Figure 1 (tube, helix red, strand yellow):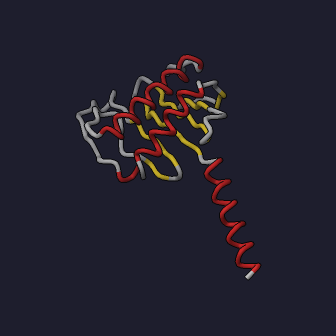
Figure 2: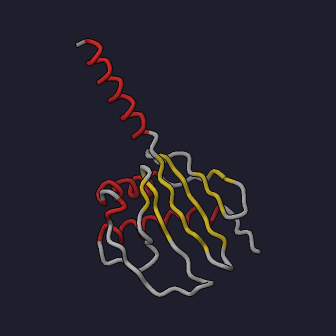
Length: 142
């Protein structure tokens, strides 16, 4: 019985540790003329890394309020792969997509106007974080 309790406690601690270190990645695919950008932060909102297509990863400072808001909206949204899919017209060469990955699950494309309030909140959060990161990481033009 003691071995079973230890296994349960150890498993619970490992699950808790994974939640503490869960990562959120916001993915802006970019387009023909504008390079894409990934912003990755941990579940505590720390260690934001920005990677532009063709560039090195750079650490950026994001406000804790911005990160907390995203994390709260992620928890309220539930599993990202269960959010409704919303399609819109996009230019073949200038269209871009916006995704959020959290706990190994990817959202549908959030770049289109969202009617679902959970998707709309995530889209707004992602846009704010991408805009803040873009101010500190220079754009490399091709």
